[in-house]
Image (cartoon, rainbow, N blue to C red; front, side, top):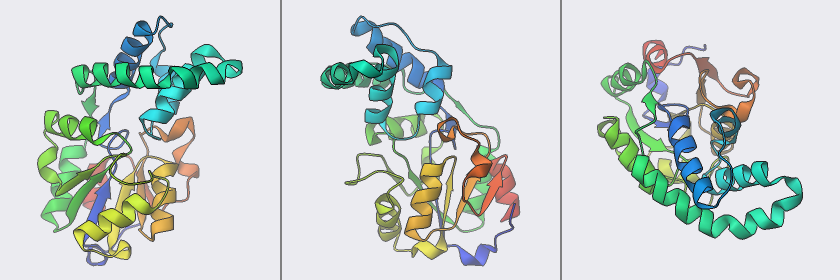
Length: 228
């Protein structure tokens, strides 16, 4: 990957799902609890993984659409409010129990902090899901602030969440590194004017991540810490 000059950055904004924590197991457990409540068949991790990253509304509608079929879009939308309530109930009950921190994450975050970067976590996951997950995995202490997908009027890939996070930190986008796993993160960073590095192991909506326009790629956050 490209080697970044640390003096160019004052902060890093880090994505959560697919970047810090592998949460597919949590998603599957919560979604299948929801599907059971709706008397619909369960889904597998293989189905769910490409749908992750665009927020809970997209995830739930995508799963309902997959199970019901394209011709039942109106029914999927009609079921959404009830589905969201059941999904929230199940997710809050299992949050973190079926997920794991990726190798190298602790080392990478420690290295970034040791080198003087201020850290923020920015995710499309609802804030009420994100904060308890970070706490459960022992990652919350690294971040000055955590913003979920419901924190601002728009979600990534819109640049607004990155711009608002930079504003909160009092740091310009050009001096803030975005670290994520998907085109959502890269597109938001490009539009906001933040340099961006993507991890190779995340979700990226089922597409090859190295085809995304980014400034660099790492196989581990520990590698990023060394590169900086």
